[in-house]
Length: 308
Image (cartoon, rainbow, N blue to C red; front, top):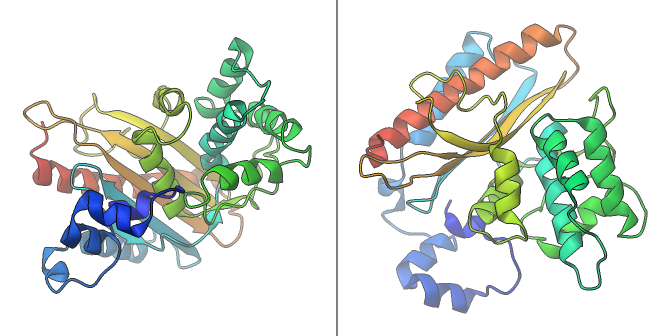
């Protein structure tokens, strides 16, 4: 896996890509078989697989729960972990940055009268920082009104009209009710990975604003209370929580000993086949399992990039 797989936009053909990145590197990024690829493959994925197997053996992740994991290193332009990355899973609140992006795509369209007012900004912050379902429905309805008035599906259509290669497994079919019981909206770990790549590289309108919203302090599962993780690390993220899902996707921005940024993405999804009757205990245990995986990833990145 590689950086090319995070590029999901029109206008980049094979010839241009090879010219930009160079023959051998581009061939590898485009998926060509390279004799020495296995020898150079990072060991993080195998470490993560072993950790999750241990967590399953200990009952932290049950047999009726499926997982997806993805890690992308911006510095090395490498996909370090790709486990069940293409599988659509419940999105829950992790979908909310996608809703924000659909708003900004709509605002940037020719002839659009949509404006990013202070009131809309407040709703965006409530949606992403506080995970307000009411605010999310409000933004989704605004997007729909400017795109045919067909409800939640309009949000998906906007995203796929502008970046079909990014939102490949994304399916948006319902508003998020006030009680948060949303199970039918879907996205894959690879969708989140491609989105975060585009967000970091300013490939979508108002990327800076979406990053700022995602960077507002919250109770994430990939840096907060993670063993070995410095308290001053910046994270751009969104969690997702239901009685059937524990997830977190984000960009972790850390620095090496020379002060150079060494950002990477982390996406973790644990999806249960049926609703738990013990939500508090279940979500706490799965959140802690995810923190343990994030700790492993950070430890690997610290060694790889001599992090401060």
